[in-house]
Image (cartoon, rainbow, N blue to C red):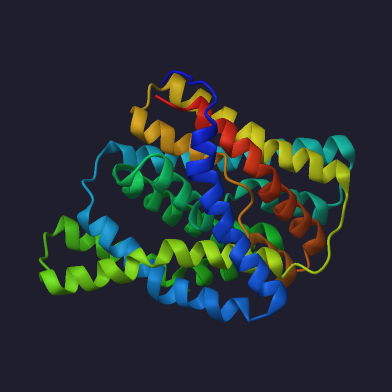
Length: 306
């Protein structure tokens, strides 16, 4: 994978359109506040399961999907270790440590990652990107709740939450139908595809609405600076080293690096609020990381030009 030269056209063609969609959600939420959870529920229970099922049903499974699972777990473990070291170094409280793990351990692979991969790499990379979203979603709903609650009850709650996710069953059905070669009619395939195609633009609008719903920030710059640096700089560098050392397939490697460069997942704020794990601090990191991503992701995409 060789590095490319800076291209303003790439920024205009990929980043600007995506940011405009995010901005539309942000503006409408500011001007006419809506219940973001209701809009998000449409994505969670209808659109995303359709996208996941049809993508996995049509996917040509290879070793790349196992590499994704290994990489996502490895990246998360590295982020946890680094945050624990920072917590000891700066003497953070347990809640602040958990907040930093939430902010750096989970990237926005769905609302943000999917459109960036689709618009910059193309449809050939979509199965990888969707599978990353699935794995990240499972990890977010399990480890995210665990670190937000930090207790034995959190482990049980995390497992129950994963089992409640409709995307979990959509993934299982997609893989099962593909592996067992269970046919579906063209009309049903088309219908699921159409519903699934609506997931990406709606997720983008929802992210803008989630950012627009933030009412207060906590500017603890020590934690914010370290978390944003780890998330927006450290993670893509780690991905590049992983891809280079293990000689990963160029297409998969590009997707891993792009997704690793995504800002903090917006859902972590929800968990921080629910379990009172420095929600204002997590919201601040999410907002700032997303703002910084306009520049950092543009740099990553330009460096990845082939």
